[in-house]
Structures are given as structure tokens and as C-alpha cells.
Image 1 (cartoon, rainbow, N blue to C red):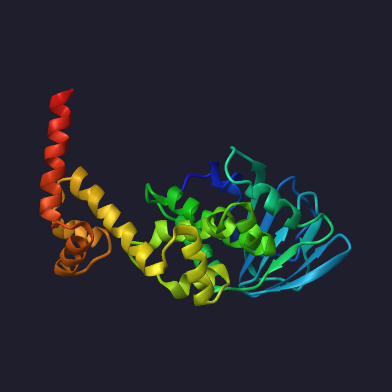
Image 2: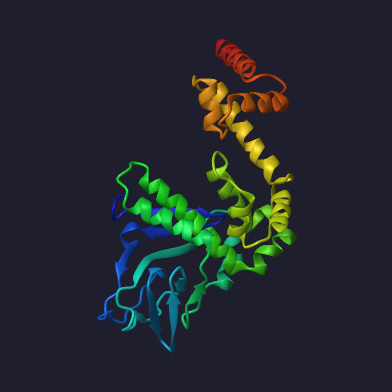
Length: 293
């Protein structure tokens, strides 16, 4: 990942700007000075324990917990926090576009200058943090995109928790897909539908029971977890069959099937024709369209 880059992330009409230089994991020192920022600041404790002192108070933070600080809040990590490994990043928020107004849903829940907001440890947050730290130290040409994806998941998780009941009230605004929770669901499926998607993990990410998560998915997409996962895989397979020359066995693996026979049976049952027949039919369509131009 390139230092000095500004990462632009959008969640609905919430725009985030994060400078990569602000993403850092460092050991706390006893000489931490009192300071403030013009941006929001996030601190996640990777190991150890620490005490954050701020105007008017202080709070202890344990391993795996996260603190969100408002702009202009003077703070420092107090003596006694030596050796604590803390991942920090700074970000700016702004309203963008004309999509679903998640910005107005979120802003009343953001921290005030008087005190930070604490997020308890969870597998969902830990997973996002691991993705961020791995990407930040990677030399891969895709490292920046990997970090952006992990940041998007992290902030949708945090914003969903902040919005709380506000996110649940989205049904009055036009349906459950349309809130921050809906974006968490959508982002999760888009990222993990090929490999590793599980109802248990998504339930943890949403802080809901499996039954509640199933209801949220049905409200967003009209079908449950397994059916939506299957539809995404079939749609992706159709695109690869019609738009690439990859072998069908490779396509089966690319959309999440380890068994070619299993993929073949499911595809034919869903689409009505075999993968080979689908490819031939769509290649003929493309050829006739190009000749008609």
C-alpha cells in the first residue's frame, strides 16, 4: 500500500476520507503528549492494556476494544500504558450523493467532543482489523483495494452499532435493505459469496441471532441466506460463461463450487440448460448482435 494516499470510501451517502499515513500500529510510550485532531480518530488495542485521558475524564481500554474520538478532543495515553500495541487511524466524514440518507441516520449517534465511544471486542471487528493490518504491510498491487474493503466492512460494522435502533427504523423509510445494516449484508455477500460465507459469521457481524439475520436478508432481497448465496453464484457463473473463455471447471471453482458435478447439476436445475449449452447460446447471441451492427 502506498503511503500518502487518500482512500475514498462510500457507505450509502456517507463519504469517508482516510489518509494512509494515519493508519499505524505503534507501541505506546510514557511521553505521549496531550493533543487533538481536526478529524475523527479511531484507536483499536491490538495487545496489552491502556488508559486514555481526555478533557474531563479518562477510560481504560482492553485488548480488542476500540475507541472512537470526536474532532478537537484533547487526549493522551496515560503513563501505565507502556508497551500497549495500538492501531490508530484518522478519518473525515461528509455527506455525498443523493442515495439513501444514511448520513442523517448516523450523525446524531457520533461521539461528542466531551467523551469517546467504546466498542466492545467482537470477531467481526477483529476480522476487519486483521485485514487492514495485513494489507497495510503488503507489497501486492491489490493491497490498497484489500485495505479499502476491510475498512468499508469495519466502518459499516461500527456505524451499524452506532445507529442502533435508528438502523432498525429503516423499514419506515422504505425497507430494510436501505439502512446501514443493509449495506453490511450487501458488502458481506459481495465479498464472501465465493468462499467462506456463513450465516453464523454474518449474524455476528450484525450483532443479531441467526433467525433475525434471516429476516433481515429476506427483507433486503426477498429470499433467505442460502437462496441469495445461490443466486449470486449462478449470476456470476452466467457472466463468466458468456464473457470469458475459461474452462467450465475453472468457472465452477471461481464461483464457489469444489465439485464440477455439483455445479453442473445446480446450474442446470436453476437455468434450465447445462453450462455448455448456456455458453453456446450466448455466444450465438453475441455473434448475431455484432453482425447486425
